[in-house]
Length: 381
Image (cartoon, rainbow, N blue to C red; front, side):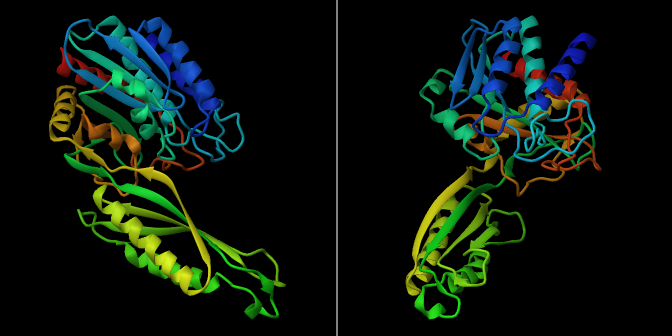
């Protein structure tokens, strides 16, 4: 159990992290801070620079057994924070507005407990993952050759979730977070004088067509196995002038599916649709894939372990608010391990994630740490 001194120190640490947020791929100083904070806990091994700026702290019991991974995130968001808190972001245009500062702090709280009361067998890995917000971090971590040294049998993560009662945990077997992928479509034609548009090749008709046609590929609806949703998030065409007919345009679309398999088919349909429309109108077309997230699917055994741990701690839990349309790249850890995502309630009327006035509630720290610690000792003794 964390002491009062632990909670004071962890709260101060969380607020210090909050002051200096670093966005996806730039988590250099955050990673250094984590490595320094881990030193007094004397983990068996620390792997730095994993999949970018990731840090993995391994607590090895020295007795043969399974490997249990707990994951949190290092990155912040490119959003300007609006807050009067003394610990508000010191970096304009960047903020820990998704609670990753709190997730890291919970992980360090777990590290303190493991250093005092090690598991009886196997290994516990504290994974501080980079670049969750753009979907690239988990993929980079698991593709790093050094991840083979970890190869977890189990993987768990906690993400705070406003809109749920404080301290309530939502989880379930099966789909938690949808797969998603950002598709950038760039159209190139030829500009012309606005008085003689026929002398150029305008992307306007194709843009108008694709806005509706792409949306029709996935119209949302019930979040079941057949769920598909396409959201147009950005459109840009030509220059802000009245004298030139446009020659270039770009469309950003976010595609979502309930599972990974249907995503490839929907992306192929979108690309084919854009290519055919561009060819018909004499335009060149190029594509870029961004923010690629696998679906987060909870394993039945891992979910049972997590629920058992929460029941032992008298922490209320259920499947309220699940599954979610939003994406989370934790799903990749579940491709080769029994994995479960837990959604820890922040409060029903709390600021939403990614809002400029959001701040992680420090009173969640001991709840998250206790869940992690209970899971660790339930699985590894």
